[in-house]
Image (cartoon, rainbow, N blue to C red; front, side, top):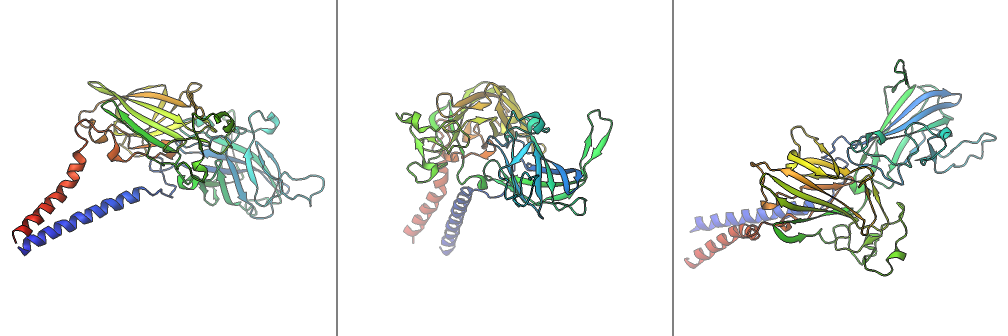
Length: 455
């Protein structure tokens, strides 16, 4: 009898431990990682290259270029802001392709006044339409920096700076410190400047190679946790085989009737909607349409049709922000059937394969001048497309939520997914998870009652 009771006790202990483990794993999944590492773009970063191209009587002239080596994360208007702290008492005499936001105190200079005398200058890009005599290559885009996959031709931004009161040789120049990059808000963390081999330049006729006097690099990485306190997008699900529409989780990005900015919203049926919208400005604070999830953007994944050898999905991206448009938007979707994507309608597509032999991640973005611009909230505030997948007999199934994505990013930010137990189930399978979960518990309780009754 004691042996039977001890076996039952061990079974109950194991069940309790397993339940505790499940609760721990669930609680861990609710935390947002503070790390800048992105598993879908493990080498993604923005690299700032500072090339000293010539010496001056009291300093040097340098070309500073930012390269966006991130596959799908870009910087949209109002653009990037780059800052640093001088190592000595340097000043900026002049600039091309960019400008500092403040001049600082230059009162000690007579006659020729520097462009900036601040110890910690902040530089922004010039706007399109800048006079040609103030431009250099890759400048004057208003700070917009596209992603490496989506638009590699516009994934770099440059400006030229003439630095005074600095060293005039490789041994006397001191690299700046404390680099900061805003895009346009926080999110990027920059490491220290590292001196590297001088950059080499090929002339236009490709017959001569010149090189910089000195070069240093700065690497900046992105963290969604640093960029915003709450998520910026969520995912909803539906299917042809179930009438249930699984909405975004409640309060996924914030809640209504909250004193914080994330709780500020306006009803789409409000008679004061026109007066509440501040105008389509990228600097305006978010003014969201009142929803249960309070996310600026929702991605809806609908399993639309089932054919003999194929199945079809419809993706709809909806903007709930009345104060912000999204230009050059993109999606990153993770699903095991992307290795058999047959046809895509009205979206661009590129597979992302950060790990050899695994093709389950796709980057999607709009067609130029057709749907690459996501309007503000309203009747036109959405874009959509359909995807046709070929079935793989060894893996394809509609059971257990297999047809829904594992993960979705919008503009590089991870979107909040519904909990797996809420996914649309095939008919007559909705109770299986509940039964399978309680069956071991009921068996153990029944055994205990039987043993107690026969004592």
